[in-house]
Length: 312
Image (tube, rainbow, N blue to C red):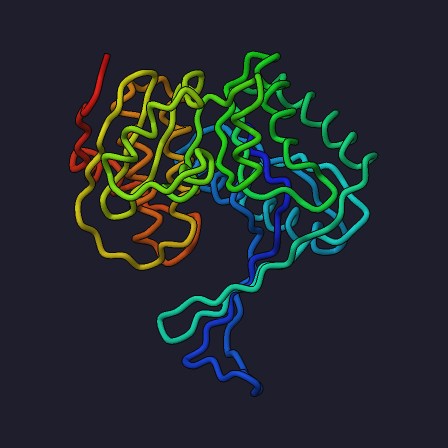
């Protein structure tokens, strides 16, 4: 089984508008509210791929109950620890082919609440082979907290797949216990290494940094240009077919789900990379975030090209 961790989940609210008028009343005819957060997008895609999965993290208040109820309606297994403050909202205003987001920082977590979550986490690790950790940390949680989760997972011989950014990512890979897989973009690689990556050759050389030596997988998404991947000591370039982009939101989460699916099902490295790319593409081709059409999976799989560009 796979465990997904979302430390700072949200209710994702979508407001579609023909035009956003600043400093005026804007009325919407339809509103979408879903149980959101990067880790929950990963969970949904894994469910659609028929992988056994359970979601966890921290939820609080009426908004937290809303998320639990919606996960129940979707048939998603979950085991979240309770906090006293309300879970946050994340608002997306869709207007004139743009997306303007208003993201609440979320609740502040107390030491006791964090301890309660960690006990839940340790218990759930005993049931799973892989844990994915996605997104930001809530207020009150130190920036290196994911290192603590990774260390415990490694202690229990559970592979950790990490998708975060900024200082949280940097501290997570500087610790003694390393994640099994990380999925940064080019900008995040630059932040971690402390210098600007200006070209594809710079990125390939960056992946050879000693900082990544003990991380088995480093997957760098390049959007429509596919991805650059370091697996152990070999670097691969992945090329993907041209597709119609309908909704790119959550495609990184779907990619992570596809990679996790490939690892969980014992695929070869090339098959794992293809599965990740296809899941990301299928999310992009779907109107709903965190949803893929699995019937198109095999058709796209054979159109993804994986080539070694460096090896030892």
